[in-house]
Length: 344
Ligand code: SAH
Image 1: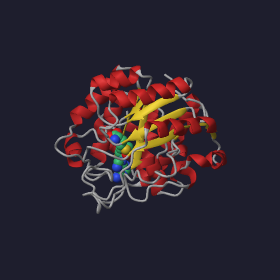
Image 2 (image 1 turned 90 degrees about the vertical axis):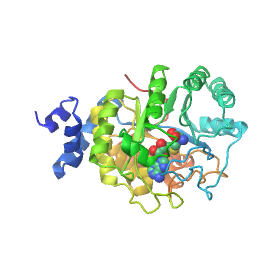
Image 3 (image 1 turned 135 degrees about the vertical axis):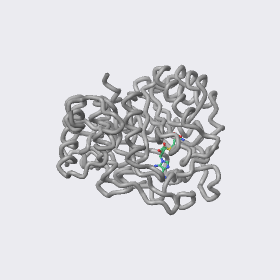
């Protein structure tokens, strides 16, 4: 069977077949997979786009990932951390505005040890038992993930970044390893988190081969969430002069992931919105079903600069829910403030 038929009939593709799908130059193929991705998403989640409140609560990081503007050795990164009280206030405000999922994302900041972070998670769940808490704070020990789960965390986002070992070492310093990242993802799944993996598209050293390996990795792991965005260079990183990832290829990858993992929660990411003015809507039209408006308090908003030009106004801001809802309606979708758990 041809790789296209396999793809459309829901069969698992081999790495070589993924390469063909990723490289296909046929314009009609884009239409085909976009429509397929969209109809799969509609059949499982309807025309709802789930809304998550994103709180970027610390820009301190002990890691030195070569692509990220918050890397340890970036001297001009603006560092801040929200106090636990301010995090809880932010959640309260978000809850009043209607949010029922809070995503706590940050650098790997030692200040937020298990005790502090568990206390924050526990307090949020006590105040708002009907809200979901998603953590995205990088690699931690198995024990740490266990404690945070016990404290009430529901979901965890940890992009695998690339499934290719050599590429992984090109993007990360020697003290980080693909093995540990994957160990973390397996721990999270085993502990019962709804787990998110994902990758940047067009990061330095990537190719259709590395993306094909990502697809094989994702279809083996079967994470509940998949985050995909274009790589965007940051001026104070070693990758400052690298090319940004292609929006078209990112959209194609979104559709392929939707087809391969029909039930996955897939955000239309800020990086996509930053790279293209209609990126966020295009993401939805290509199979995504989640958006994550930024609800970080105004004083600190904009300091979480992982890449240059990160979009912090307009559609990305939590204050503009009505505008976001309106733009979703304009393409035939409904903004949903429900908790929006993975449907298995
Ligand atoms: N410290 C956490 C959160 C990282 S920020 C963790 O390690 O998981 C969330 C994601 O932003 C990263 O996983 C990465 O895929 C993406 N990112 C970082 N730098 C980027 C860049 N320059 N361009 C595009 N995406 C980037």
